[in-house]
Image (cartoon, rainbow, N blue to C red; front, side, top):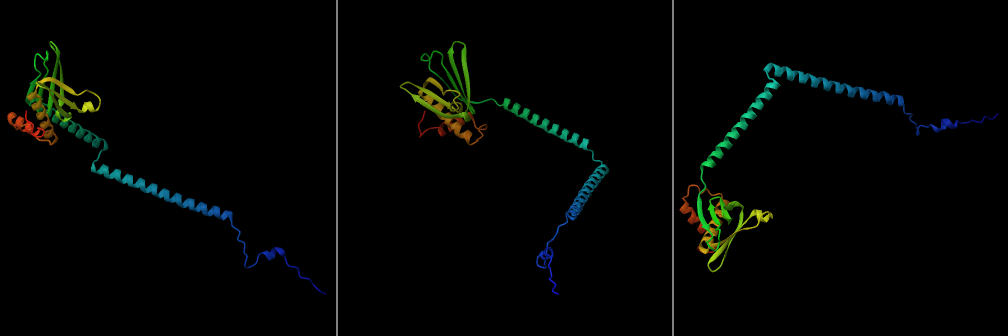
Length: 231
């Protein structure tokens, strides 16, 4: 009697070479929960250490007698003292400047009667003053810092000359160049040379307060001459 052996097809699938691993989702959840517990424990430890450190700092500060409010008050007092010192220094500087009178190096006027109301030019160490007269008892005064002047030129005729002064304000389209007409030719050329010499000295930050007026005028006029042209 012949017996036919039947093989289980389901069992045949699982051979030694082909193993199927069945992952356990419950195990995953358990391991993830353990990781979360560990991270939470670390966070709790860090928080506890931080609080302990803060307590230690507070206790040490209290031992040393350190008070935050008193520290703020001391800092405010120091800031007020510093501001008071700066204010006092500024006042002293203003007083010193008021005591120093500006020295006039050269003065020129337009010629009457060609100019019925003659204009006046006054050159000081740090500025140029122009007084324009248009009628009786009326005048317009303009002061230009030497460091603000960018060009000085002279236009001459047979008898007279016109002095042109251009400032930085003209470059910014704020004002027109300043002109003084009917000046004597020698006065206009001398004024131009002095202004140019002062521009050079101020650009080099030279202190001229200890130089006499006569010496200063000679030096700046010689310094400002173009190609040796004399007044």
